[in-house]
Length: 158
Image 1 (cartoon, rainbow, N blue to C red):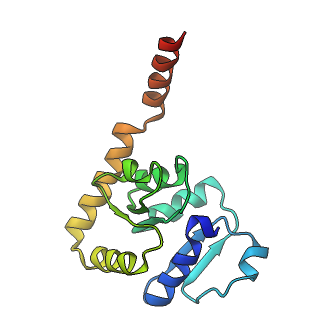
Image 2 (image 1 turned 90 degrees about the vertical axis):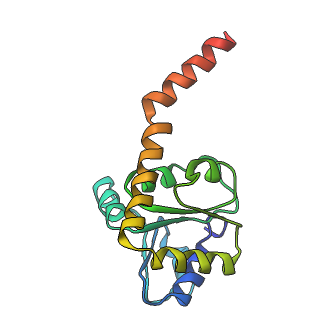
């Protein structure tokens, strides 16, 4: 979880006690080894419908990995209309593009500044970012489009 930036999220929670931070996929043994601020809710597992509901109620999504492949959870969050904040790692900047915020990994000053910037935006701008994030996933990462690209790639090899 440290490579996913959970330590940074816990620091953010301390710095922004007026917001609720939710971490999905944290097992109890790891959770018990940490000091969790009161404004952090940890889920070990969520059913698909619970996960979708949680994302639909979330304003922004943090993908603060120090190592990552292709972050499906980031795409799911953007598709749900979350404003993405991600680290400058692997595919994250390409996925987010100009629909959210890309930050240097583990740069707390930059992350704090980005959170303040997002929370100070008016509702119109927040909705615009959320809608653009959703549309970016639909336009670029739709499963059928990915399948077509893959088949085209394979046919070029064979």
